[in-house]
Image 1 (tube, rainbow, N blue to C red):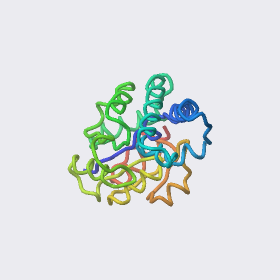
Image 2: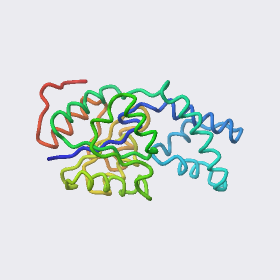
Image 3: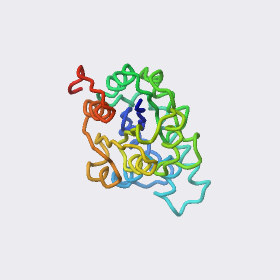
Length: 226
């Protein structure tokens, strides 16, 4: 039986606007400086502290921790107002779950926020495994989180797929030996995902579901375009 792994932000939950607003607020409030859209999206998909370290390499660790605290306060306060389900993700996940595929989450997000986001939209019951920021010592693009999720579900790399919207998802999946499916939502382009190792790239959740079931050799005829 094939098993399906998914990134969270930008793949299942549409939190892009929330993340961008939280970064802009943090740079304004914490550093009294502006930051460009290109700077912000460059490191989407990495753990929060790692993103700040890459964006502000001259800052000492206590300053990075201060920025993380400012970001989290703003992000968590506005999360439920701004978070949405990526169109079709809930229907696609429920279809895969109904067909008996083991499903898992592999995210760089903290456990509490991961669970809250899934519960907010009634999706937590669909997943057998959730690998979050606290689950591993190394994070995407390192393969460790994907490998852990795959092993917890019990399947082989040859019959595991990982779906994500960032190059770090594709790098982690490809390095772990699983099949990689890139979803172009609203951040990274098809070229970026392909260069990072995407085996296939799609533009909506209807094609996510069709591609995954096609790889597994099980069609879902009832689902056309979502």
